[in-house]
Length: 339
Image (tube, rainbow, N blue to C red; front, side):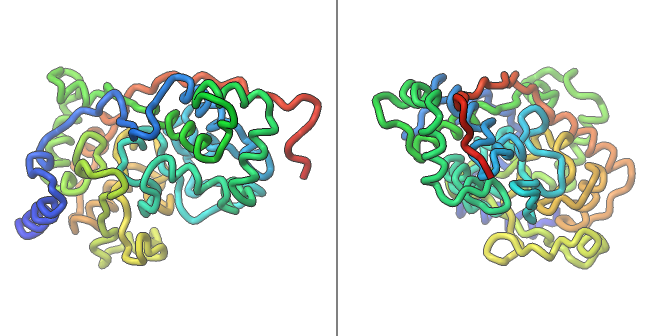
């Protein structure tokens, strides 16, 4: 990274109140995600949230659940360029991983949701996603399923607890448990110098020397620590005079505020979440590395550099907590979705 770009970054971080030490420090992923004061994580809330996360009856057709696009049996996405919702409809952006999303200071590619709770609301009523007419329909459906009643009461206490606010709080509480610590990289920075291979260590040094840490810093490799709802955004593509911009149609979607700005995504488990970028048009991690170097750093990488970087990125694959499939509360002798 050039001296001028480095100084600009430090100035930007100073305005945000981010210490320059954070920029340089390699940090392990915490094993627990912070929760907001109005939605503390509890076992009962997590059990309820997991059931709701897997329940396709929260979609208009009864075919799409949160897990359909953010598959926790995989890398937290669906390995598709763009996700498929109700009636086979598709959107224009690739599904981000839900693993470690609790460490994002904003959600969605453009950071328009300030929290996990706010993010949960969006897909429920989005026509190409889960397609419900409104939030009231979602709550009417859940209230009609008798088995959910005691689960909500246990999670939130009292009666009349099946509300849209509690529904999104439960799903968000579950999502805050989706943490993948103890990757080879985590063990390495904690002192186990045998945790990463020699090639991965070289890749880590290459990652730093090229300037990748100017955006992908911090324990989640998604930018500096920010106040909830703030978001850390960068222009993409920064350099447009190259073959990748046209090849992968990188200018078509203008991102946040029509400025081609995007929330810096996590690199955790990046080896498991192909295809890449907001439009899902890049199929392989090797190609994604080349595209990033050229569009963000204006650098052409040789094969050895790409191989070392990919080796390092594979070291960011963590340990996935077991996700037991929930037994969903049944409807007895009738169905919610008849059309």
